[in-house]
Amino acid sequence: MSQYLLSVYETEGSVEGAPSTPEEMREFMGRVIALEEELDRAGAFVFGGALHGPDATTVVRGGTGLDKVTTDGPFVEAKEHVGGFYILDADDLDAALAWAEKVVEATNHAIEVRPFRATGRVRAGH
Image 1 (spheres, rainbow, N blue to C red):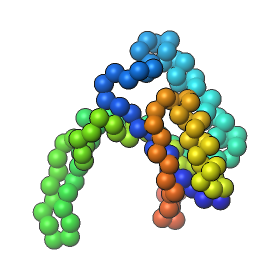
Image 2 (spheres, rainbow, N blue to C red):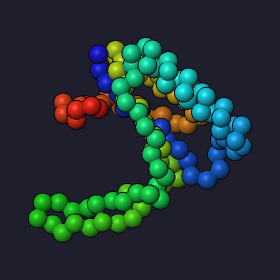
Image 3 (cartoon, helix red, strand yellow):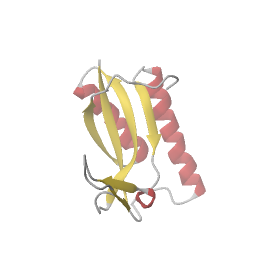
């Protein structure tokens, strides 16, 4: 079994099909919760989360022996940004892609799938 990172990409501004009313947001969250429950029942769900928007980003640059520079804002200016992610256990890339299709259906967002290489270091309780 391998692990895969499914990055959920959001687009700045108004997006066709994005929830715009409280009822649409409830329906959206219902689809996401149902997807996460399905992932959990299948034993595929490892970890996931949502991120604050790019305006909450801080970038640190520099390297060994260099002065560190901290700036507000995303690393690159782009209309799309990572809005959330899932780390999944899947037999292979095809299985991870099948899950990604379900995430697309639930969220209406583009999903990037990459093999995830765990460092082997996990903090207790997480």
